[in-house]
Length: 397
Image 1 (cartoon, rainbow, N blue to C red):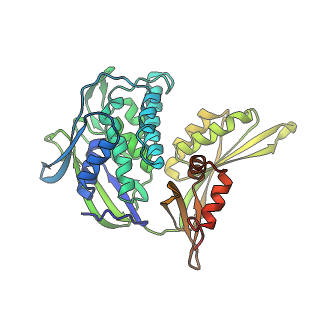
Image 2: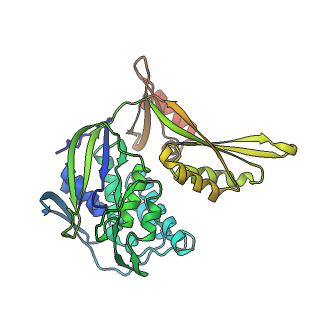
Image 3: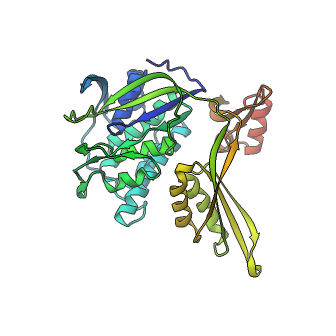
């Protein structure tokens, strides 16, 4: 069992050898050491109704696993993304938990919208808009924060075969939205009958890992197995989570993707940057150009891991008028970084800390948290930032 005291060097590897779902993730986190009373109190604090949370130890083809047991009130709600976001923002959970939960549901909405030929705002959530999916998503991101994980990786995801009954009728396995959610993530296609990976599980995996492959060398700290509801005869239906000691690698092989555009209005640049970053780019910059025939234009550059190339390129084409791009490999050297959440004047502030080569650290408070805290305290954001530095909350050490 893993000690739940926060550690800056702790990372989590998802190993979906038999698939992944939201309840399987929570079951595995419980086995890793998340206290069940903490999860029960967290769910009660959401004030989503009479929801009971329990867990039981089960066997899945000889592997002892933990199965999450949820008892929920019956409902007929078919929610839109805005309804789910409103619920999440009304729970009072930490801002970083809200942001990750909203990101997961936004990914779900975008995948469903693409499948059904509509917009994410018009998508009706059925299975994934139900209370159990909301509890799964919020519970997973809050539990990961509570356990102090600072990075997330994944191994290949098992898809499954056959057919599954959903709100719109019978769909092939994997459902179309699941494959879209797994864009850029390695998958496996063994001869397993039935749905192995659910939309909620795929969205959480994408939101947390961004498709980052598990390191080839790591130090395992603890392992937890979360059981699925079914117990099929062809596989141990469980998810393995591996808590590892994060490595302090300072270099990485990355790609730069670059395109020049001369017919994109500047007002569409911010959503372009947001789309490229949401697709998994590590950074995205846009600079002004003077192009041939005296035309003004823009150069867009994205920095990304090689496995995110397809997803980032798709986002670039979707969010801009680009008709092509250049790409080349680069070697990035970076300081070892970690993130922690501190309390300042009653407000939660995320602080990024970078370890300097000669010792000591450089600290930077998260801009969005500074703005939110400043609004709550009735002060200008820059004044809040200066106060954070002066009071040593985000000072260099």
